Length: 322
Ligand code: AVJ
Image (cartoon, rainbow, N blue to C red; front, side, top):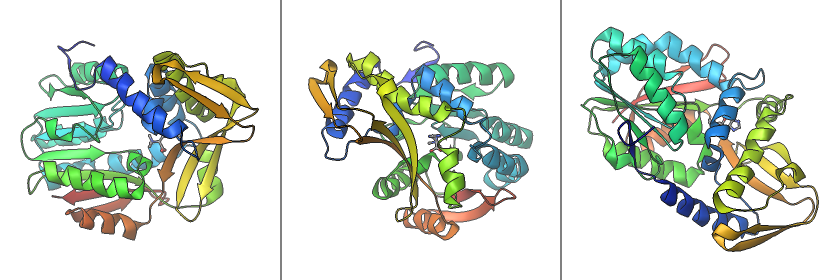
């Protein structure tokens, strides 16, 4: 886990500074909010891995079903020499693509990019061990900032899986897709995973599981602020909720204050007051309709070449050409 293994575009000071900016703007807003990327310290990344195995959390399994069925086709259609994964986490599902692409004989390099240095270092070590001969270059960074720095031989296939694009607000999403298009040369590729609109009960359960793992994951952002900025949040005094916003077609995760509280955040030079019953919005996870995904990709300058869903049509995967 050193600069010999990973390209670090985010050092600990830079991370703390970025968190200060987000905490100041989010926790001083009339409706308090925090960006979801701050869930993912070592503990948060572990908790997310646990979430992916929960009975209620179907997206990981649904997307895996698609990748399992289509990896060979993705390799044939793209002929990719470099696989770039944004928000790679443990890179578990990526192995299906690595297998498909190496089986096809074109793949030379793998570039996983993630904000979590610990998760990335583990993934890089595991992939290097299992794919000798593959040039693996981990990049620690934020995919909203560090896209221009992605190495690798063309044609590249950029994959953004898990439905993480749903964490962006619609305007941010448009900007992000456009920025991915802009770093790609014509004829390079994007593989995009999008969770689909479905029964709100199923959605709300997926984000509020019976075992309470998602609640722990949600509260982890408060631990991260405590550890990084010396804050005195008492995470146990916030209850986790998932809420389906039908107008915006997104799930919100919320942390609701159980009593009046004053929280000190010395690292951000900030004191935050909470009223009993007030909530912090900690994540939006937008859900999509097939026509909407196609329109957003076209708007960003992509040509949609393939669209697949799992057999239960819970989750969509798009293969688009720049
Ligand atoms: C990793 C962003 C795809 O939005 O479903 C899981 C994160 N949050 N449970 C999602 C998450 C709560 C997840 N993404």
